[in-house]
Amino acid sequence: SCHICDLTNMRFATVIFVIGVLVVASSGQQSSHPPIPVDNTSSWDPPTPPKNSCIYDFCYLVYAPVCGFSICDGLRTFGNDCFLNQANYCTNRTEGARFTKLFDNSCDTVFPFCPAR
Image 1 (cartoon, rainbow, N blue to C red):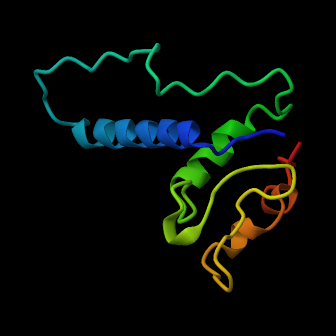
Image 2 (cartoon, helix red, strand yellow; image 1 turned 90 degrees about the horizontal axis):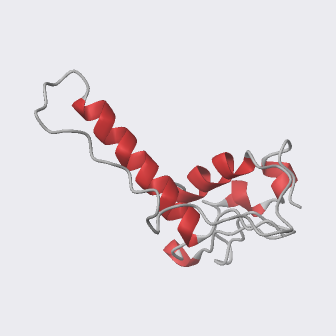
Image 3 (tube, rainbow, N blue to C red; image 1 turned 180 degrees about the vertical axis):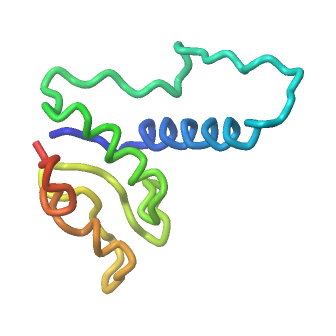
């Protein structure tokens, strides 16, 4: 299976989002501070895909941000888990809940161009 939305990918997407916000907020302003160097060896880097990885490599760009910024965020918010397995992208753990209904379907239903492998 192709595990897209794990804690590492969620953190990575969050870091990219925060950096983007900082860049937008600082654009147009004069700053005497040099840009913060990016440490490519940090633990924030996305994990190396396993040998038997998903053939749809661009899916990492789709699933991680969606998972990172949805209610189903991998931290069991409101009793939900966010993960990708061979059947479901985001399985709702709360009986009767409706706020994550979009992600209760299979991967190829939510994102037809990026089926679960």
